[in-house]
Length: 160
Image (tube, rainbow, N blue to C red; front, side):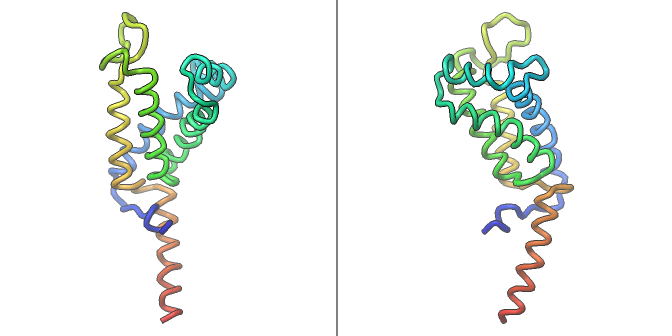
């Protein structure tokens, strides 16, 4: 079962999807987790999640974990499908709790009170595509699927 989950082709498609997605998500994750790039850091972000957005603390915590560790997983192509699904879930939550009231457009010119869901839709598309194609070339998943596949083949030969 695990082998089917990480199996991926040697295509560049997964690579070209996961590198920009992982980079964008890691940027936002480091804002939340460590206060980098003008972010508020872990404590203030958790306070925002629980008091302003009013989501359970575990959801806020998992959001930070997915946006940081999940993004690193995307960059390395480790458990790419799982991290893509988690990223989709995080952005769906962000869209429904925060971005939807501001309409489609991001706040490019500072003339609205928040960000729209424009970027969320791009992330949905990239995440769903990664769910389908997997991590692709130069990924830990590709490396592991080759090793697990060889082990499974040897095991089948020995039991035959």
